Image (cartoon, rainbow, N blue to C red; front, side):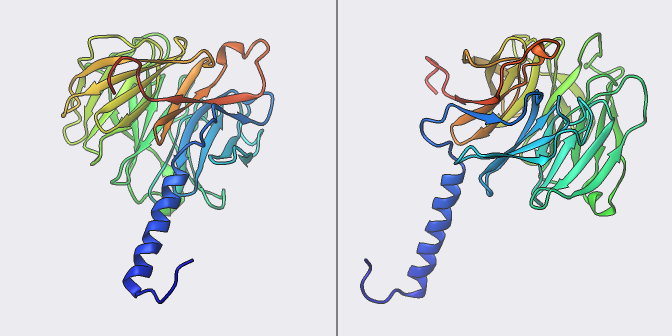
Length: 323
């Protein structure tokens, strides 16, 4: 019990402290939580995006065509976009922008969807030219508001410029053609995970089939291969935290941890995060000191997957690396 009167400054200090405490609570996985469960027997989850201010994360169901909203504290999972709303492999990579909008790469549909995260209302749709080979895989929205979308089948990095959502949608811009650059498309899946640096001047893209990572200078459109000293085969989702880059290796079922150079032109392998619960791990998102790693179970799509589908909580400390 506090006795006496509090000054305005004291009240303001307490209020700020309370907000900071709540924010901290939202950004931490509860102690003892090792996984989150998703409803449904055909989810095959793929993308993930975290809204720390709301204390939730979103997971795209590549198999179900839905999107799920999960409370970080309680683990309660609900349908944000009901299963069956879209076809298989039409809700893939995701990101949240500073305006509280959820961006979704539409996989084989060739579309980019934008939802209001609070209301679940779809507020914009951006299209790319239709064709037999297209797969919009992952998406990053920079602090400048531009959205960049990878295409695993077409050698194009698509962009939706900042401010475009207000118009309700339109055509995504074929911003960069990888043809003739250091990033050579080959058989299998190509451009996959993507991240941006703080000011949006540099992008990193991983090639799934080779495990190579490429650096894209936004101002010049120059593409160079990141000197990492190791090929991260099956490279899928990317997560960046300061100078640390996490690469989820689908098929290897582990997360490679790399230390980036200041200009992101090179990286050094620190080690791997491994967990026996990972199953066709697709991508991840950072919450506090933990990675939430999505278990897609794509290898079981033609068989019998293990249900419920899960998102594993994996601590980011690499054993023996002195992190």
